[in-house]
Length: 360
Image 1 (cartoon, helix red, strand yellow):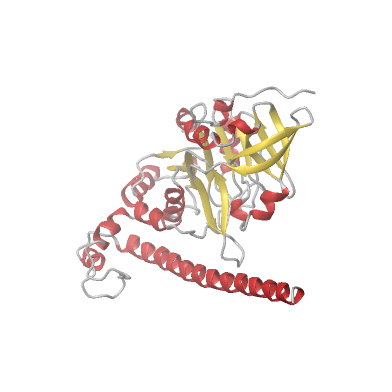
Image 2 (cartoon, helix red, strand yellow; image 1 turned 90 degrees about the vertical axis):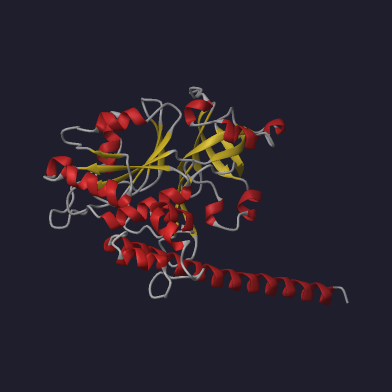
């Protein structure tokens, strides 16, 4: 059965991607957007409809890291075959935005959760899950990737101090766009819908049990994603979303669903931290030492601001915690890069030695 054609604009195509694609446009290539990433292949949305795709051998060989391979939300350059039902992926167009974290395993590597997202709805539930420190971590990740964050406080029907929690998010985390919603009463759902315009890509992120899948099902209008109850004793739930998937919404928007994350390690998040803790950056510029850690140094403007109550103690402690995590990761990356460089040159010398032996 022939696929129904799709207008690329409805998939989020814009001038940014069009300009990048101009280098390939005259070579018989087409563009598609990664909707699902499987273990060995991908499902793409193209102007010809849904297509099954695989990465070319050349692309796979040249990719040095997992983050350089296609991820959900990526625009990719493809050749189409079999009556436009199969695709070979040759390249990725530059990502306008991304949501990344440190790989959850022991590797010092970037894990791209989603690419080319315009709006990121950071979901927390107004029960035991509510955690302002965790919210600031999520904000740093979203800001670093270049997307716009919106805080969604779910399960407002279970909370007696909703306005106080909204005020805390706005005052401490500095997020003006904060929406309290209830999947049960559907309060706030229309406010979310108004933000999802045709061609705009959104993503929901948050820890397991906050109700992302339930909210997404309400936006889609059908029970597409599985939901499950959270444990009453700690408000935690199992991961009901097991893979990243892009869905076209009835409103014309594009949604990327992501699994609940128990870990969201920072990845090269210097700019994201600066935006999340903007007042710290202003004080840090006044520190006596350029490499000030803001913990014990004399002449530290951040510590001076803390002593004058211009910065809250809770916010300061979370900032220092995230800053230390980022600095530690940077040191690990440097060590990893040095080891990789040594390994590369060792391999080159070995190949050169074998070449010289053969040509004596």
